[in-house]
Image (cartoon, rainbow, N blue to C red; front, side, top):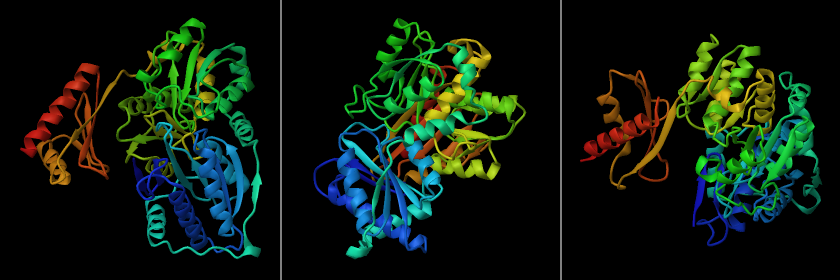
Length: 461
């Protein structure tokens, strides 16, 4: 069906023909390319890589292929088994490893899987590093170890609980305060590893947990992307259970969505806003999100008297700008919380702990908390073009049409109007322009998107 090669790794559907889908041959080839890159990057006799996976049906197969390919290159493996993306990131630094691989296709359906690659800091590779690995994979210039130099596999199945311990040690996380609040929380972990991690974290904080789809068997009961249209079951159960809130994570637990006590979406965009509000109230500093994230974080940051900046879309870009600005918190509008006091990766465990501490301190409901923040509505659309159309020329013409407005070209074209904004990004793999808009009402956001689509069609014609 599909195989996507990018600087952040390889992603595709299981089965089919090599190089067209994610087959065993493709998994071996890209694992070997990563191992070769590590050998070139670090002048060491012994290398160690941490490997973990989400609960996808194909996960065990892909993990065995990847681990034993690296063993065949003389690289040692720390197998953390069923895990989360942020847990593997944390494990890389705790083990002093040279890199890490997370086997997960994030929010994609169950037929997908992926190899996501980390450096020795437990952070995603940058563009230059990813490009080198793609080049190595293309050349297939691999050298495997002789029999006496094969790597070894060491299994450590407690890293989710080590991760939880690290979260609870964070200065701003107050488990005792949360326990006194007597929260009742419904958890939807889409039958992946969040069903291990999130309930365990909540119970450690003294929270009563109602589990929904928390069996890590890889059979996703609904579309695993944590969007409103996919979350009818938990929205209903929160109300039925008279819970204080619902917590939803994607299969690899780096995206966090909250359901309020009325069964309404708190909004993925506002997960970061609420956590940032809490952090900024105690440790003032800069914040960062990407260009397609809500203006609400910018407004909130300014209300705290601090500086906000926007990066290009992509976690690695957000992380780099956070480092450049010494940001105290950042992330992406898809519910990804990056809190440097923990590590530079999107982490739903950290997000849950900060959110609940904030809520316990405020002593208000989740719906009342939402009312304290700036109100914005987003619309996400795309326009498909024929392959012969030059997308860059279209974006340049749009920029010229709105030259009197505040414009950013860091990632596509973003136009900041006084009361709303539009962000246009081209796809790297097909003739598509993605159109993101935000305004003070859903109608206004939708109308701005329609206006921009008409403008693009006029330019094309």
